[in-house]
Length: 273
Image 1 (tube, helix red, strand yellow):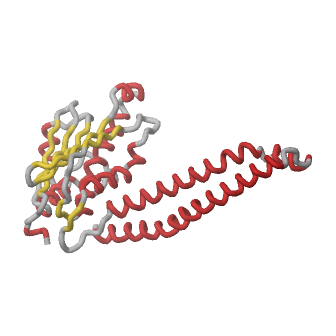
Image 2 (cartoon, one colour; image 1 turned 135 degrees about the horizontal axis):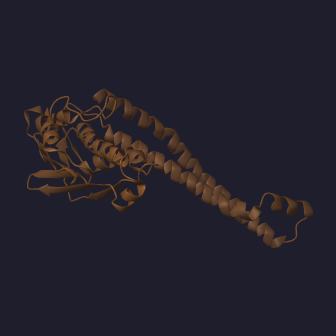
Image 3 (cartoon, helix red, strand yellow; image 1 turned 90 degrees about the vertical axis):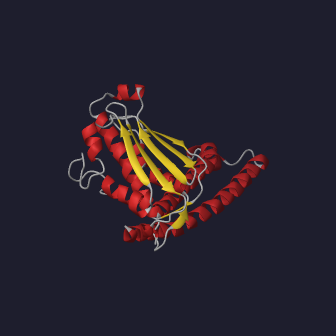
């Protein structure tokens, strides 16, 4: 996991160099274009009746539209580069290489980076509307942890919820799902010397039999080749053994599921080094 984190972080870092160049170039180009458009406007004021070839060319290229749309195009390009920068930052945050010792980390940044990476799966598709994500964040201090490992746990729980919603969409109409939107609610709160992270969905829930086995090693309800590959047994080990926390699930058939993670703000677990 640490090696993969180093690889992804390295790729994200390499992306930053050309994106930084593009951002700077777009800024300069906007200034140049603005100067040219102002010069053109000044020229038109003083020479309102240009020669016929000039007028014909202006009509051919639709000069008025071009002058109005070019700055908007550059703004769109800047938006795209900002989006890539955000993805790169999220990749580095999500795949943060864990060091030998636990380090202070902002859990909200880790959750947000995970959501951004999963954004393509949350969007609407031909089977269902977009999955709504409600983020109800409290005031959390930084906690001592291995952030890359915790981000993997968040990824596993959120991806499982999305998989479940995709399965439900196979048996429900688009109109039904629009009437009862699929939702994932993420809540965080500080409770004494712990932080509590709740990830709740309004999906189909679990039977008592499935809930009893959900953290068992190698247990899965998915077919071969599906899922994140982490598994809730490993997720529980990361939470309980590595971070001296706890993870539990509450669920009823037809009422959705809620995973509740509690983590100490300062971890004195023997595994913290």
